[in-house]
Image 1 (cartoon, rainbow, N blue to C red):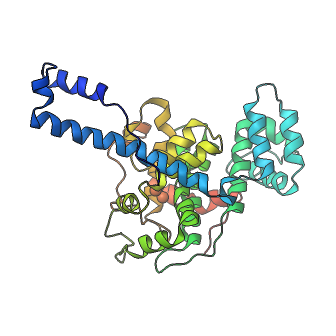
Image 2: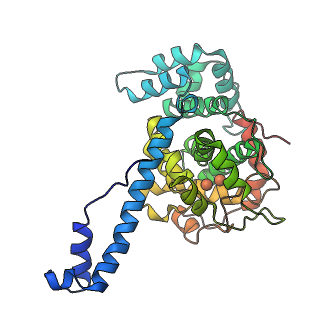
Image 3: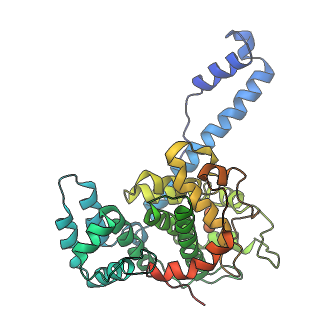
Length: 338
Ligand SMILES: [Fe+2]
Ligand SMILES: [Fe+2]
């Protein structure tokens, strides 16, 4: 276990004093009220940075999951390299027949509604764009790195993966409602949002098992405790922080890191950075209404009060989104277990 990260509180103290109209004197500094409130603020700051450091240590300690397939890493490198071209991407995608046929299937699906059949990777890349092809390649590779052999009393890895796919489809449909062109990015963000749980399981399966076994759920699947708080007690961090560190390690764009880090409360973000996290937040809560699946981390299944306002969605057809989830999963090349 690493030592807690201690950050200077000079900034906090200065602003606290100015907010309280206090003068910076020894007498004020030693006043019990000021010492207590500064201590509380310090706890929060240290805790957050400590949770992030613990998440980094946990991700650093897992091996097979922390490595994406070779072809996916090469695709990410190509997109990041400003001197690379669509031809480079075509060469790498074509070297993987399974990935090539998957991309052709996606581009020809009803989701993209192309007027005629697309038969080449080159044409797919020019129609979808480099970034979308990269996101599809990453999504396709994620399913390959999970092991589905864990089953507890009310937690199965397979259910969590099904939940991730449903959330991916729902996030993508919410993005489309919002008029966003980043539907592929929303899909990938939904697929990744709870990936921190998979890491916790790989990191310490005994602690993960006893944590999950301690949660009691009612007949609707609503948990009796806040799983995020249980994670903090168990791992000194949570699945959001761990997932975000993994996304950083994989060199994923900021929007995916933010969506993983803040899908339970995107209101802490502002501007464009909050958009994909809001898609995922809404998607996550929508799919919780579907029978079965995974919702142990949603003690309250209500979408954040500012979500629709933040997304500029006035009239959301949530039932329509729920009805399309299986179809979109299929269009993207995923199938949810019956
Ligand atoms: Fe979550
Ligand atoms: Fe979730």
